[in-house]
Length: 189
Image (cartoon, rainbow, N blue to C red; front, top):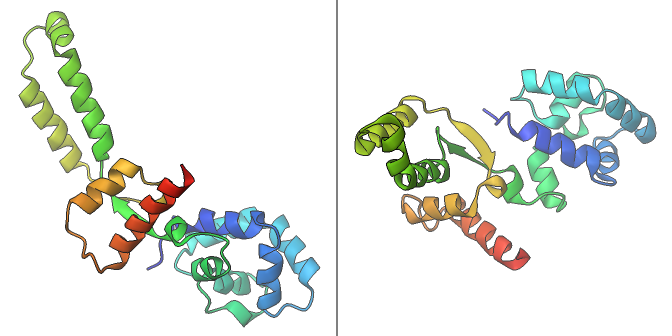
């Protein structure tokens, strides 16, 4: 099953990157490139709505099913197409599932509570902070809402925590992508 969260990223990359839509329409086999591009741009909301309702379809498959393009790119994964043409980086369209409160958010809550323990006790009486933190943990664990985010949108702390967890194979795809993302960020700063 394809990830629904890829849809706005793919649409933005194809519609907003100069010449990307033109290249897609041309490679799909369309003979009336300008007309098809205009139709796709005019119907971008309809395309977005249809695709989010049918998110397991590939971009080319969806455009063909809506009658906008021939079937030349029907079987092409748009994410691969975008990566091959260097329109996006692989980390922009590869997703990592996260649950509930992110560790960074949880640490911020914990640090705040530790810093504010005295004030909280003054205002509300004796509070067992250990018990409170257990409740926060229990809440987080009881409400695991899995969210998929592009690797490029994860915080550096989050990526380091994933790598430090040592549950990824150092030869595996995700380990390499996380390491490359950290290197990319170091080069950019």
